[in-house]
Structures are given as C-alpha cells and as structure tokens.
Length: 140
Image (tube, rainbow, N blue to C red; front, side, top):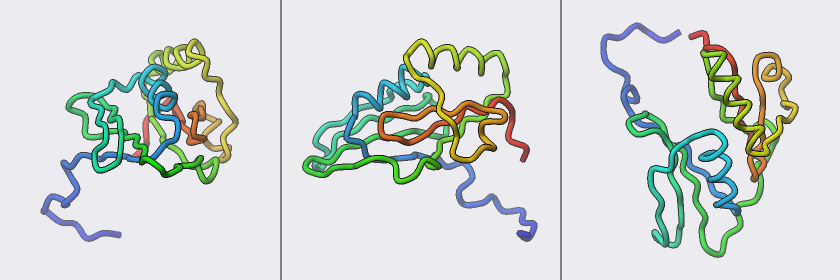
C-alpha cells in the first residue's frame, strides 16, 4: 500500500499517448477513426523517416498514434491479449457503438481472457490488436 501523500503525483495531469507501428496505416486509421470514432488530430510524413497519424478527442488526456518507418516491417500483435479497453458507462451509447462497428464491417471476436466477454465486446483491428468495448464503469 502506498503512503498517503499530499503532493500531486508526477503523472497526474499528464497526457497519455499510446503509440505503435503498423504496416497497414490507412486500414488501421479507418478502424479507429471511422469505426470507433476517434477523430484524426494530425498526420505527419517523413518525420525522421516515420509517417504517422494521431487520433484522439481534442482536449482529452489521451491519444492514439500509429506510425510506419520506411523500410521496417511492424508485423502483427504479439498475442491476442494485447488490448485497449474502453469503459462505456452509458448502455445506450455502448449499444450504438456496437451498431456502428457492425455497419462498418467489424464483427466481434472471442476474447482470449473470458472476463472481457461477460460485460463487453471485443474487436480485432487490422494488425491483430484488440479493443474491448466494456459496458460499465471501472470500479476504482
């Protein structure tokens, strides 16, 4: 157990960017942008040999970044348990998101860990990484 402190933790208030490479930039961007609804914030080309796209909601403390390095293969997800989990407390918004994913041609996959199938739906992106749409809140 951590000691109680009155200081603000160093990472509190920071922005989290999850960055990963892809060999299928446009397909991956379409999955997260058009399917899951993350707006495209910016795109860059030949930044020290890297191309990339950053997705996220303006003002939100998190972003998703997808990059490709010229001459280097990124490959697929190393395991079926590489997850991005989105907790969605609003059941109607969750149902609408499931409908959007289906209309965009994304069908659910069985989760590697059966816990995620009990209150959520798992999708696999074009690189084999998975996203769980969990209906509920994270009980902190």
